[in-house]
Amino acid sequence: MSRNLSHQSKRGFSLIELLVAIFIIIILTTAILVSLAKSREKSRDNKRKTDLAVIQQGLEMYYADQHQFPPGSCTNVSSLSTDPSSQNDFSKYVSPVPADPYPSLNISYKYNLVTDTNNFPHYIIVSTLENRNDSDYDKALTGTYWATANDACVGGWYGAGKNYHYFVSSD
Image (cartoon, rainbow, N blue to C red; front, top):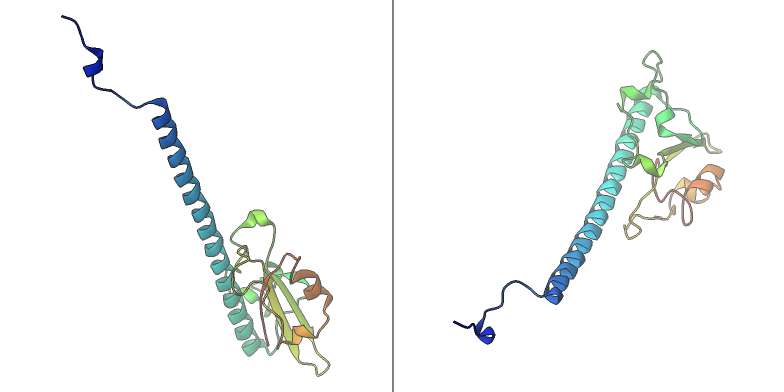
């Protein structure tokens, strides 16, 4: 009984077929991981925008009760008065005070309050955005007090080449 090798069926995959399959799996995995990273960036940016809106709402409620905004010049939002025994306790309006959702960036929300020549208060809160394609990334200050204020804090924080790319303000 001799075997005819030409009639044997192939078993398994060749090395080339295995390498091609592995290469395709690597490409698909890479595409998924890149997409997932972009989704996480957008999610953190949306959280930042929501946080700033919450802080802004708290500042407006604080102003309605206290007839002034919390004092703060070139400061972290987290350092606004959170002393429950103080009548200026900001944590009555926003508790806990939100913090950046990606702490490893070492960037916190910033708050600046100034009074103009008519003794009218203006505040701005700034944050970073990771997604440079976001429609609010480096949004112009046009139409706000801050567009012409020539404020050292805001000028040092906000805009192209700076750490902060999104803001809300009292204007």
